[in-house]
Image (cartoon, rainbow, N blue to C red):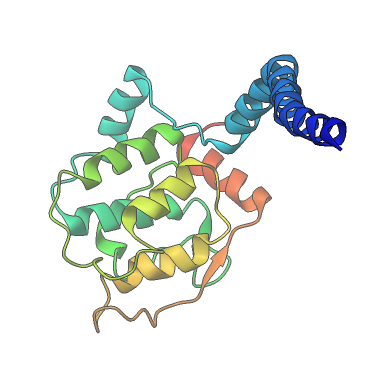
Amino acid sequence: MKKNIALGIAGLAAVPAGVYFAFTFSDNEMGADKTNKDASSLEIAAPIKYIATNEERVTAERDVGEISDELTLITRMVEMSLQKVNIGGENDTPPEIVADSVRRIQMTKGNIFYLEQQVDSIEISRNTKNSAYSYESILDRWLEGNFDNITDETEFLLSLVSKPYGIYDGEKVTEKSRIKEQEYIQRYFEQNN
């Protein structure tokens, strides 16, 4: 009986020691591999933030111009979106809201980055409630090359300069085909991208 109790106590002491050595061995042998797998999954999951070069910043400042207020920001974002959308049919005629001041701004990463940098320097009063379509979220998506909601985003931007305020009931906004977008780029920016 004493022998069985002694063996039982020895067995109980051996189990935690064995578990300790098993986990220690496991962590040392496979820890490096696990760390590498974790790091590679972080690389895939973490978005890479775009930063424009100095040349792109100078070009963007020239092409986009000074953003001194929220209305100018909205107007420049709409003017940029005209590369991707049609407002009122297949032509590229801009809406009446911005017709008198229409500029054509190419949707380049440098230009988008420039607009994103300007958001913090102006007072925001029109776009205060809608986080899904905040200026920053729209520009972030554009910077990532995500134009899945470009028609909704353009209508939202137009609603911020429409009367009655906050409601866009103008011409229908439709997405340009890739061919039409290329034609637009060639026509207004004389580039073969």
